[in-house]
Image 1 (cartoon, helix red, strand yellow):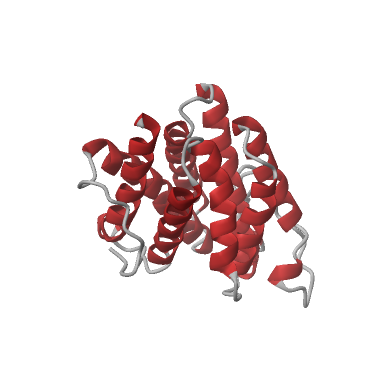
Image 2 (image 1 turned 90 degrees about the horizontal axis):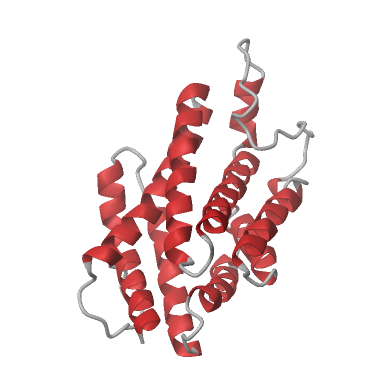
Amino acid sequence: MKKNLPPLDIPAPSRQAREAAETLLRGFHYQDLREKHLIACDFDAARGAATKASGYMSQSFKIDFPTVPLDNAERAGSLFMQALFLQDEIENRAEFYDCLSGPGPVPEDTFVNVAEAVPGMSINDDPRWELVRELLEEVCEETQIDDEYAVLHARFWRYHGQRRDGWRSIARRAHRIKLARMVPNANASDIDKLSEYFVAGVDNHDTWSREDAEQDIESTIDIVARYYQRIFELREA
């Protein structure tokens, strides 16, 4: 586990907490796999990975929002993953355009939104960031999260992908809003600590090799399982 994380004063994570963590992490694994397959121009494999990524994230949102109707939580998870896919398409547009210009046809549902190449336009200025925010606003609508989450989370992704200073602070601010909806009875101290675990999970995800799924997930599961263990305990308080 990453050092210097605030103590959560919890027992070893339960099986339920570890399963919740694994569900979330497998969603991110298949998101990464979609990106890898798209860079290799393997559209069928990318679409298969996208389906699995969306499925795992829908399951994760049902865990995160147990009081939200199941259909709404599932849609929110799928929308969240669509926003994440689009973020990948913005950040990797140069590699993806190489595939789009190839001789073979590209299935219509392979990409979320393919923008026209604009010479000299930076990743930061890509107009599709507005679509990312709009997808996250739909997530908020499905789960009754404050809309400020969509603004901040899209900004976090935008900064993080470009390794711009301040992304961790923005990520914590966004995640505090989500946590306030996930665990309404949590106090400010708990929310602050859990948001630190969220950022630590992002940091760990950045180190994944994308070669060995089990090794990647195992490297991060303790952080995320402790995060869920505390959430489950707070819900029972």
